Length: 431
Image (cartoon, rainbow, N blue to C red):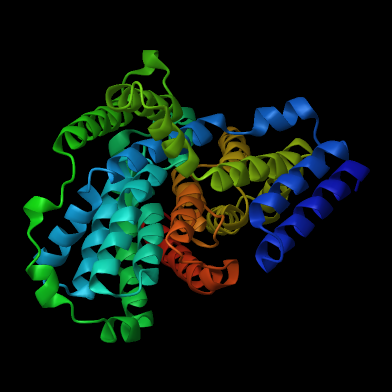
């Protein structure tokens, strides 16, 4: 191996080991590892900047601002009490209802947007009912990634595949991916309910106090609420429509920042202190953690490490349909659990297309394998998907700390199970 390949691997693995160990704050070590990549000449300064996904960062910042302003209206408190009253304070029913809502929303919205909207409600709700928020947060992370797998616009890997494979339509993604995702979702939810059964059994009975709360007095500012909901609906409408209006060329980050700036314009034109407060509450540690990760993975990509791994896997299968499909599925899942799935999918798409050019008869199972592996693989670790990082960043604001290994012990086995179910599905219906 060359100096650059060896150095890139060493820096990446050492940085990742320190993130897992949690001996050093993860944002600090991610940024330091990224800078070591640049200083060692593994990746140039220009390449490092080009690998930072500013669209993702803009999406995070824009939606965080909208959620922060929305939280001032009392809406999250209102929704949590309403949900508790509708489910009669039953924590199992609440977890199922929130998980279904998150999965459905993630199918048509960005996963990050969904968890930014639902996680604050979760903490208000669990605080009211005096129950642990941990199973609810974990369920929403897992549900967001499973739900995002179902549609063409639900997760970036699907968007990338659809943009390169013109014969796959919006309906094709739903028809071929939704059935297995529904099975995975149900199995995942049942296992979570089993794992946390003791937590639910110990849940305090706050039924009478919650049922007696009057919903009408929970909204603190109806005028602010109307303006927040207007900009939120406007933003979500653009999210849903921009993929169907190609000449716009708008990315989700542009839409999120447009909605955030419009909301700030409508709500606080001359209030500097309020504006400073909102920006001070943005999760900047999460934002810069992503910056570090993007550069670290960029170092692997620039030096051909990701591409080499993908090519070697394809070569080992020898083009045999079952072996090739299973290799794409499992490699995508394992890689996506530990590195950003976007550069990996970008590498795999031309490799799969080349197989078609070389006479591989049926590429469809490979596309679904790549989608399922890259999307569901994100459930494997804390940094496997943007939604994971954001949701757990919000959790830290509410004094809930979930370590890398604590999440790994639950998320990784569930991810492997979901890929196992996907393997059976692909074998039964496509191979």
